[in-house]
Length: 239
Image 1: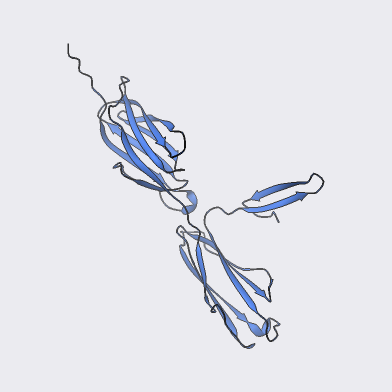
Image 2: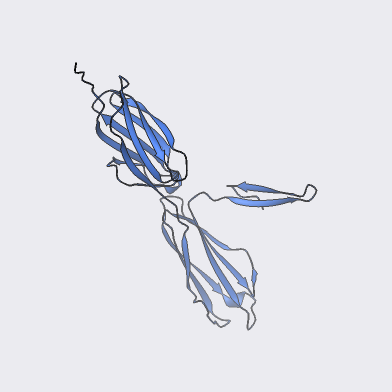
């Protein structure tokens, strides 16, 4: 006797990439061609497989170097479609399979490589004054700072000190609308108003903060118990 067994075949596949909310980037959906897939760490990935037969489930296996294989179940989202969502955390190889409504599994497995991208720290430079400059007491010193980031900037700070003694920084908070990937700020110092004397040395440092979540950390020392307590806050107020 010859028995015909129909196995589920893959007709199409797609992936929806939802970047972390702080990036302010919109989710994007595109066909999945089972080539290398790149996603920012912390993105949410939604995979959908469409078959020629009604499906009851699907499976995703995530193989990471030096780690156990993770197995995720895909659930039906339409008669012939299964879907699953999980966060993009580690690079690895993702394989897919499907099971039809009769419990018959696909004979093929489909694979794609997942490459995780990381949010890089911002870059910043003081364009003027030069690294070693000499100025008269009657000079208006213009400080020009330029910064950039791959996903967006939130704050630029200019730290300044006289003869190694630093005060409060000058802070520029950038608009919290669309991601601002490049920024330029200027600040003018009237040297005669600073109470300087001949030979004093001014030192400047610049700092940029990107739009990824910023945490403030303080360490409290409990002398009685001889222990340290770490306090972290996204709102500040831990000093």
